[in-house]
Image (tube, rainbow, N blue to C red):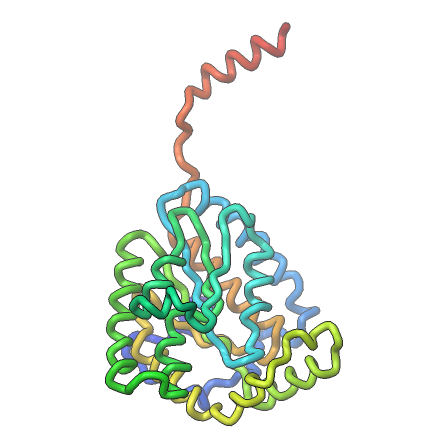
Length: 276
């Protein structure tokens, strides 16, 4: 199956998240039955990322968005865990610093964009400026409503410069979020993750859904598509993201660059040295 299309938001389509099943898990019943496939894609990620790094001409940007507990950190651990950290990094988009707030809203995203040969994951992203900003009315509607077009222009410019962009919305249900909050409460090793803001934000669930639906609908383009990933099952979420990243990297036709040295001469020198 072409997973690049299964969860992709087609350009111009109107997204209705209530019609998409966050508990979908494909042909696998559980993590155990999917283990071999998960390992396969993990190995492919490792090999393809090495090719991207060695080629050094293009880059990959992965944007992750989700409700609280949606699994952004889990995806990062799974995807980056399969890669060489020399060519990967994570950029976090928290409340803007004073320096960031003194610039336009895309400034910090541009600064964090990947260099050639690099994979960068945005943990949250420039989309926060049409999500939380909208839900909490931090700026006027006339301001945030103009940002969709600027986001599309920004992503198009990155693409024209050789950056492949994949954007994932990790789709969980309200009940699943509540269960994950309880898991944090019950597990002392996860207490550090708890904040009062997480629970306070639950009352804005409908507003966030509407904000996400508009962002997904207006900013999924051929060059920078959005994918809505069923997120209730963590193992399936990780598998689906890995498959899409692998399929997109494979489609890039990556190749090792030609050597910059005279290999025949170096072989002769090696064999001569070995005979001494």
